[in-house]
Length: 148
Length: 88
Image (cartoon, rainbow over all chains, first blue to last red; front, side, top):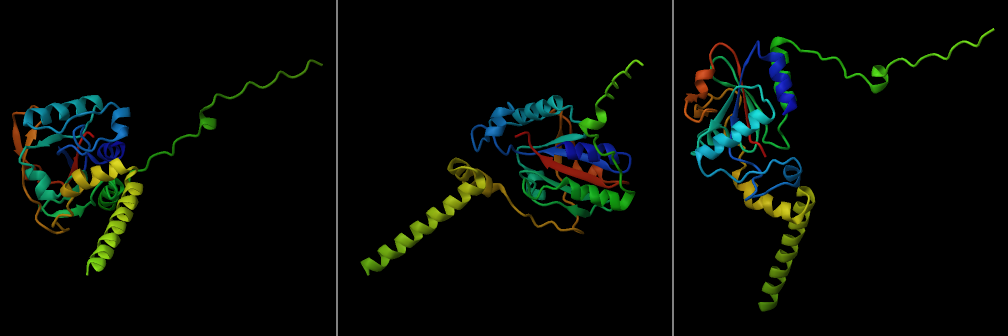
Protein backbone atom coordinates (compact mmCIF):
# COMPACT_ATOMS: atom_id res chain seq x y z
CA UNK A 1 0.00 0.00 0.00
CA UNK A 2 2.83 2.36 0.84
CA UNK A 3 4.30 1.88 -2.62
CA UNK A 4 1.17 2.97 -4.41
CA UNK A 5 0.75 5.98 -2.11
CA UNK A 6 4.29 7.03 -2.89
CA UNK A 7 3.62 6.64 -6.62
CA UNK A 8 0.50 8.76 -6.20
CA UNK A 9 2.43 11.46 -4.41
CA UNK A 10 5.11 11.41 -7.08
CA UNK A 11 2.84 11.46 -10.13
CA UNK A 12 -0.50 12.94 -9.11
CA UNK A 13 0.38 16.05 -11.06
CA UNK A 14 0.78 13.98 -14.22
CA UNK A 15 -1.76 11.19 -13.99
CA UNK A 16 -5.13 10.55 -12.39
CA UNK A 17 -5.54 7.82 -9.84
CA UNK A 18 -8.51 5.78 -8.70
CA UNK A 19 -8.61 3.03 -6.12
CA UNK A 20 -11.52 0.62 -6.38
CA UNK A 21 -12.45 -1.44 -3.34
CA UNK A 22 -13.49 -4.95 -4.38
CA UNK A 23 -14.69 -7.97 -2.40
CA UNK A 24 -12.60 -8.85 0.61
CA UNK A 25 -9.71 -11.25 0.10
CA UNK A 26 -9.40 -12.65 3.62
CA UNK A 27 -12.60 -12.05 5.56
CA UNK A 28 -13.28 -13.70 8.89
CA UNK A 29 -15.93 -15.98 7.43
CA UNK A 30 -13.73 -17.26 4.60
CA UNK A 31 -9.97 -17.55 4.45
CA UNK A 32 -8.78 -15.37 7.28
CA UNK A 33 -5.07 -14.74 7.64
CA UNK A 34 -3.24 -14.64 10.95
CA UNK A 35 -1.66 -11.36 9.92
CA UNK A 36 -5.12 -9.78 9.70
CA UNK A 37 -5.87 -10.86 13.27
CA UNK A 38 -2.54 -9.47 14.41
CA UNK A 39 -3.23 -6.18 12.62
CA UNK A 40 -6.83 -6.08 13.86
CA UNK A 41 -8.20 -6.11 10.33
CA UNK A 42 -11.11 -8.47 10.87
CA UNK A 43 -14.18 -8.15 8.69
CA UNK A 44 -16.72 -10.63 7.43
CA UNK A 45 -17.35 -10.71 3.70
CA UNK A 46 -19.81 -7.85 3.07
CA UNK A 47 -23.25 -9.05 2.07
CA UNK A 48 -24.65 -5.59 1.39
CA UNK A 49 -23.37 -2.44 -0.24
CA UNK A 50 -23.70 -0.61 3.08
CA UNK A 51 -21.26 -3.07 4.64
CA UNK A 52 -18.81 -2.58 1.79
CA UNK A 53 -19.08 1.17 2.13
CA UNK A 54 -18.46 0.92 5.88
CA UNK A 55 -15.31 -1.17 5.44
CA UNK A 56 -14.02 1.10 2.68
CA UNK A 57 -14.49 4.10 4.94
CA UNK A 58 -12.72 2.30 7.80
CA UNK A 59 -9.80 1.65 5.48
CA UNK A 60 -9.45 5.18 4.16
CA UNK A 61 -9.77 6.71 7.63
CA UNK A 62 -7.45 4.28 9.37
CA UNK A 63 -4.65 4.75 6.86
CA UNK A 64 -5.50 8.31 5.85
CA UNK A 65 -5.46 6.87 2.35
CA UNK A 66 -4.96 9.81 -0.01
CA UNK A 67 -5.90 8.30 -3.38
CA UNK A 68 -9.33 8.96 -4.89
CA UNK A 69 -11.48 6.05 -3.83
CA UNK A 70 -14.50 4.16 -5.12
CA UNK A 71 -16.31 0.95 -4.32
CA UNK A 72 -17.29 -1.87 -6.63
CA UNK A 73 -21.02 -2.47 -6.24
CA UNK A 74 -22.50 -5.79 -5.15
CA UNK A 75 -22.73 -7.02 -8.75
CA UNK A 76 -18.89 -6.97 -8.77
CA UNK A 77 -19.04 -5.41 -12.21
CA UNK A 78 -15.64 -3.72 -12.01
CA UNK A 79 -14.03 -6.80 -10.52
CA UNK A 80 -15.41 -8.98 -13.29
CA UNK A 81 -14.52 -6.56 -16.07
CA UNK A 82 -10.93 -6.18 -14.90
CA UNK A 83 -10.33 -9.59 -13.29
CA UNK A 84 -9.27 -7.48 -10.38
CA UNK A 85 -9.52 -9.73 -7.33
CA UNK A 86 -7.65 -9.84 -5.02
CA UNK A 87 -5.55 -6.88 -6.12
CA UNK A 88 -4.39 -5.56 -9.43
CA UNK A 89 -3.19 -2.41 -11.15
CA UNK A 90 -4.01 -1.09 -14.61
CA UNK A 91 -3.11 2.11 -16.37
CA UNK A 92 -5.59 3.45 -18.90
CA UNK A 93 -4.24 5.97 -21.37
CA UNK A 94 -5.95 9.11 -22.63
CA UNK A 95 -7.52 7.24 -25.53
CA UNK A 96 -9.26 4.86 -23.13
CA UNK A 97 -7.08 1.86 -23.86
CA UNK A 98 -5.20 -0.36 -21.47
CA UNK A 99 -1.63 0.91 -21.41
CA UNK A 100 -0.40 -1.22 -18.54
CA UNK A 101 -1.89 -4.44 -17.22
CA UNK A 102 -0.55 -5.59 -13.91
CA UNK A 103 -0.48 -9.19 -12.83
CA UNK A 104 -2.82 -10.88 -10.38
CA UNK A 105 -2.09 -10.21 -6.77
CA UNK A 106 -0.69 -10.97 -4.42
CA UNK A 107 2.27 -12.62 -6.11
CA UNK A 108 2.23 -10.57 -9.29
CA UNK A 109 0.98 -7.32 -7.82
CA UNK A 110 3.90 -5.07 -8.63
CA UNK A 111 3.39 -1.33 -8.13
CA UNK A 112 6.97 -0.79 -9.24
CA UNK A 113 5.92 -1.77 -12.77
CA UNK A 114 3.30 0.97 -12.78
CA UNK A 115 5.96 3.34 -11.52
CA UNK A 116 8.23 2.29 -14.37
CA UNK A 117 5.47 3.04 -16.88
CA UNK A 118 4.94 6.49 -15.39
CA UNK A 119 8.67 7.10 -15.17
CA UNK A 120 9.17 6.15 -18.82
CA UNK A 121 6.56 8.70 -19.78
CA UNK A 122 7.11 11.52 -17.32
CA UNK A 123 10.55 10.92 -15.94
CA UNK A 124 11.69 9.18 -12.82
CA UNK A 125 11.15 10.72 -9.43
CA UNK A 126 14.14 10.05 -7.29
CA UNK A 127 14.03 9.74 -3.57
CA UNK A 128 16.94 10.15 -1.25
CA UNK A 129 18.12 6.87 0.15
CA UNK A 130 17.08 6.52 3.77
CA UNK A 131 19.82 7.61 6.07
CA UNK A 132 21.51 4.98 8.13
CA UNK A 133 21.13 5.25 11.92
CA UNK A 134 24.81 6.10 12.08
CA UNK A 135 24.21 9.12 9.82
CA UNK A 136 21.38 10.35 12.00
CA UNK A 137 23.16 9.87 15.32
CA UNK A 138 24.25 13.14 16.91
CA UNK A 139 28.02 13.69 16.85
CA UNK A 140 29.72 12.28 19.85
CA UNK A 141 31.34 14.83 22.13
CA UNK A 142 35.07 14.72 21.86
CA UNK A 143 37.00 14.03 25.00
CA UNK A 144 38.44 17.15 26.49
CA UNK A 145 42.07 17.69 25.77
CA UNK A 146 44.21 16.90 28.76
CA UNK A 147 45.34 19.94 30.70
CA UNK A 148 48.95 20.78 30.21
CA UNK B 1 -9.94 -55.83 -12.58
CA UNK B 2 -10.65 -55.06 -8.96
CA UNK B 3 -6.93 -55.07 -8.32
CA UNK B 4 -6.38 -52.62 -11.21
CA UNK B 5 -8.90 -50.15 -9.84
CA UNK B 6 -7.45 -50.45 -6.35
CA UNK B 7 -4.08 -49.44 -7.78
CA UNK B 8 -5.62 -46.53 -9.68
CA UNK B 9 -7.42 -45.33 -6.55
CA UNK B 10 -4.22 -45.70 -4.51
CA UNK B 11 -2.13 -43.76 -6.99
CA UNK B 12 -4.73 -41.01 -7.26
CA UNK B 13 -4.90 -40.82 -3.48
CA UNK B 14 -1.14 -40.49 -3.20
CA UNK B 15 -1.10 -37.80 -5.90
CA UNK B 16 -3.88 -35.92 -4.12
CA UNK B 17 -2.04 -36.03 -0.81
CA UNK B 18 1.19 -34.93 -2.47
CA UNK B 19 -0.56 -32.04 -4.19
CA UNK B 20 -2.19 -31.00 -0.92
CA UNK B 21 1.15 -31.20 0.88
CA UNK B 22 2.82 -28.99 -1.73
CA UNK B 23 -0.08 -26.52 -1.59
CA UNK B 24 0.08 -26.50 2.21
CA UNK B 25 3.76 -25.68 2.01
CA UNK B 26 3.13 -22.85 -0.47
CA UNK B 27 0.15 -21.46 1.44
CA UNK B 28 1.71 -21.87 4.86
CA UNK B 29 -0.48 -24.54 6.46
CA UNK B 30 -3.12 -27.13 5.57
CA UNK B 31 -5.80 -24.68 6.73
CA UNK B 32 -4.44 -22.03 4.37
CA UNK B 33 -4.26 -24.57 1.56
CA UNK B 34 -7.93 -25.34 2.09
CA UNK B 35 -8.72 -21.61 2.19
CA UNK B 36 -6.84 -21.05 -1.04
CA UNK B 37 -8.68 -23.83 -2.86
CA UNK B 38 -12.09 -23.10 -1.36
CA UNK B 39 -12.12 -19.31 -1.42
CA UNK B 40 -9.32 -17.88 -3.54
CA UNK B 41 -8.96 -19.99 -6.65
CA UNK B 42 -12.63 -19.64 -7.71
CA UNK B 43 -12.24 -15.86 -7.73
CA UNK B 44 -8.83 -15.54 -9.33
CA UNK B 45 -8.93 -14.97 -13.06
CA UNK B 46 -6.26 -13.82 -15.44
CA UNK B 47 -8.87 -11.92 -17.43
CA UNK B 48 -8.94 -11.23 -21.11
CA UNK B 49 -7.77 -7.63 -21.13
CA UNK B 50 -4.51 -6.92 -22.87
CA UNK B 51 -2.42 -3.85 -23.45
CA UNK B 52 -4.20 -2.00 -26.24
CA UNK B 53 -7.66 -3.30 -25.32
CA UNK B 54 -10.45 -0.81 -24.78
CA UNK B 55 -10.74 -0.27 -21.04
CA UNK B 56 -14.08 -1.59 -19.84
CA UNK B 57 -16.40 0.73 -18.03
CA UNK B 58 -18.08 -0.02 -14.73
CA UNK B 59 -20.20 1.94 -12.32
CA UNK B 60 -18.46 2.70 -9.07
CA UNK B 61 -19.98 3.77 -5.77
CA UNK B 62 -18.42 6.76 -4.05
CA UNK B 63 -17.31 6.61 -0.43
CA UNK B 64 -20.49 8.35 0.67
CA UNK B 65 -22.34 5.21 -0.42
CA UNK B 66 -24.80 7.21 -2.46
CA UNK B 67 -23.05 8.91 -5.37
CA UNK B 68 -22.08 6.91 -8.41
CA UNK B 69 -19.60 7.50 -11.18
CA UNK B 70 -18.11 5.53 -14.05
CA UNK B 71 -14.50 4.54 -14.40
CA UNK B 72 -14.41 5.93 -17.92
CA UNK B 73 -15.49 9.32 -16.63
CA UNK B 74 -12.04 9.50 -15.09
CA UNK B 75 -10.16 8.81 -18.34
CA UNK B 76 -9.77 12.04 -20.20
CA UNK B 77 -6.69 14.10 -20.67
CA UNK B 78 -4.33 12.15 -18.47
CA UNK B 79 -3.59 8.47 -17.89
CA UNK B 80 -5.62 6.84 -15.14
CA UNK B 81 -3.83 4.57 -12.70
CA UNK B 82 -6.49 2.12 -11.58
CA UNK B 83 -5.75 0.25 -8.36
CA UNK B 84 -7.99 -2.60 -7.21
CA UNK B 85 -7.82 -4.09 -3.75
CA UNK B 86 -9.50 -4.73 -0.42
CA UNK B 87 -8.76 -4.14 3.26
CA UNK B 88 -7.84 -7.69 4.20
